[in-house]
Length: 499
Image 1 (cartoon, rainbow, N blue to C red):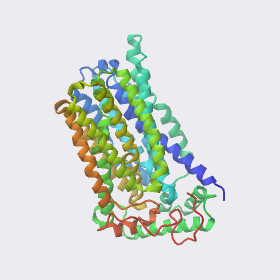
Image 2: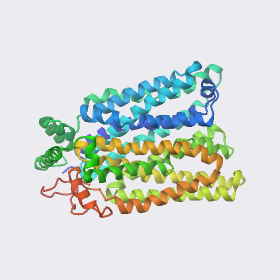
Image 3: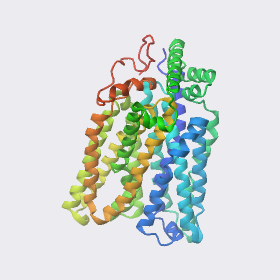
Image 4: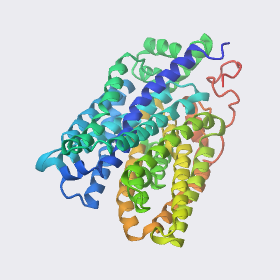
């Protein structure tokens, strides 16, 4: 059998293309760091207080509380068209942001941020849903991590574009236009992503859920061609259909089932808590609330250099996330999550201690060490919570409620982002570097929670999650077993591993 099959090539291209949606999400986050401190933006918005800046940041995450918008699109129209609706919504919100001017500029910016947040909410769930549902079990983690690769690539692009825009200031008109252009750049990937989505195959699981069995069979064969035999593909299709029908017969498929059914609720609170921890660990503070444009600026560095530092840090995160692609299916979700928490907690500890020993940036060497350990923190996030929270949440729910479950749990991340977006600027101004000890404690507390309450999902077919969580209730820390051939559907004859 070929080392690289048609299915391998197709799955990589599909999941990379879907990562463009995550790129849009990341760019929206990264570019804000430069926009909020841009002279033209500050002038256009009027007097920008720290609280108003906090609102511009946090209101975006209020928009991403997308439970009532994202899942209907994913369930009714499919994962592709939910992503299409999301990218169109982002483009509309971006237009409001770019056009903010006059006495109502601040209001237009807020409206644009809310609309963009709703669109990003749809993107941030439909993309990993699609990637999870088209991937074979043994390689699912790798393909879903491409979601985070796209995000950090967009984050890096946002920082680098913001850095480049600082040179575009020769005239007053340049200052007026440049920050708007830096925001409008996102329209290009929006157009590419939106134009390509209708031509891609829908996921077999969504097609079976909606009774399109022939299309599902054609889609799955196209996604597995060359990597699996016809018998294996048919067996996987049969298991998907059996699983969908059993959950439909049980009356699952609405919001209440996520709370009434103990098995589903066990998954819901785990996925929601994981997303909440992924933000409360300090991620929002580090990448959203202008870590480099506030903390690093306090080290005496100009805005241009702080943006360059953000670009370098985000670029390094791309490499770390690519490494995570090859680790998550080998080491498992729990190992990468706990390792990431250790790195992040240690990074926060060093920043807190050095801030106490050398207050007010009195030691340049200590300042440099602080920046280095912020980089280490970021690398830990890219190895742990960043990709793994989305991988875990996208794979543990049955098809009938997968979109609902992921959407609801992702709202836990949005709530965490709103909390931290408000806590960070106040905390850094009132208690200074002591705020790092809070985030250190959160990261270290997350470690036993992950070990005790999160069963391992690596190598498990999506249709086997019922068995895992039935066993996991009362024994959540047990590792998955019985899967020496994790790529194959159950009850299928063995074959050489493709991993």
